[in-house]
Image (cartoon, rainbow, N blue to C red; front, top):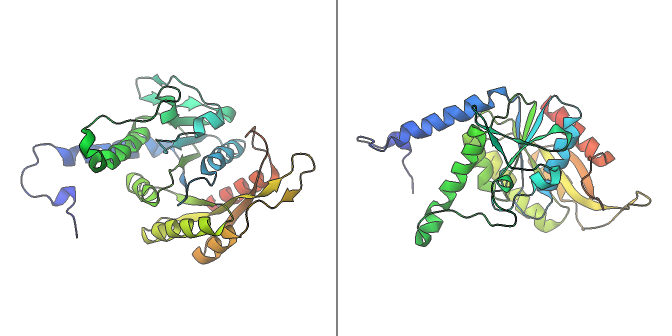
Length: 278
């Protein structure tokens, strides 16, 4: 089955939908014109520590670059703002919505800054047809986060995506200048299989994969610093080999709060990512 795009619909467009969509895309491009690189952090599986890694990379990169931002695109389960210590309420200026500032001066936008504490995300619409329009509203919210937030001059904007392979392709459609994506896995075979599907999906869509990070790759002892086993498997290395992309790093599970993200494995992973972006 094939579907016609907006520009293929014949007859008059009384809704002005084509013009609206075009204008929104132009707003996104204009807003991101001051952002040097946009990088997605994605996976095909939940529970791999993707948001933690996004926050840690942002903090480590902020020490090396002129400006770093994080867009938490996981609308239903936003956690990145809390990890970075960013707080609302957000301020709306003449130019748009000012992002919150987290540790290290990282600019942050998240649905967590817009909803009440512990309140679930909900959409207003016909309850019986929710499944037909929920995806459109979620994509629309992501478009507004990109177009309405005053990101300002940034060297790097990290986009923390929900565990859904389609969301990476949605982001690429909204941001044609997307620099690339980092895939996150844990060592297990179950994670490898899930992330492999997301990797193939991204490659078919022509998205530049910058590399893969194996998170929770062992347990870092808080006393002696030695790494012990946590999950069996070597998913990171196998995914990198299968996809022809670099293994950017293997991050152990760290028994502490995010802090200022100065663990050697995080520093090395950040350096590898920035090297891939050079």
